[in-house]
Length: 195
Figure 1 (cartoon, rainbow, N blue to C red):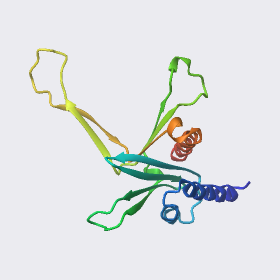
Figure 2: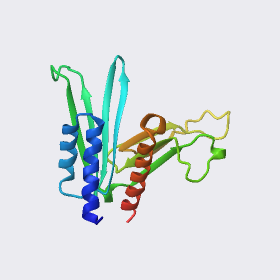
Figure 3: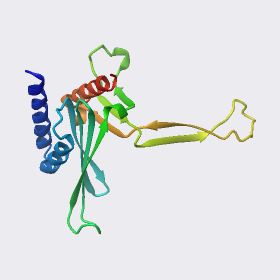
């Protein structure tokens, strides 16, 4: 299979996974494929997530797509009727980020019984966090010194981190293949941004 054939197969696989999710597939495909343009697909992850918001089930779909030059991040959310719309509606948003802008890729792996962990066993949960500087989070806390009787004001200390998109998957909730797909995507993105 040549490079063009592989890219075409990946694009077809991306569309098939979006279709298989059953979550407004025509809307999601239109928004993601439009953002891709004619660029080939190098890797992708499609994640359908459901949460409960009081009495309502809220669904969300994330699509992360890697091309040779960009990271495409797509999010689709549904909303009940409200003062904006008398009928339920959905919003599909895509962001195209140049690979040169990606400055942080964090992969958090959770394993059970770490003392018995063996190479290649794999985590039961993975969180992928990607940052490119669009969203920054500042965490502050009061600064102190080592003297327990000190009452001086030492100001604040803190950290600033970039976490523009986070994706959490687990073997129990999403299946083995999704966890492996996220790990493979993280490897491909890390390789693409490390050049």
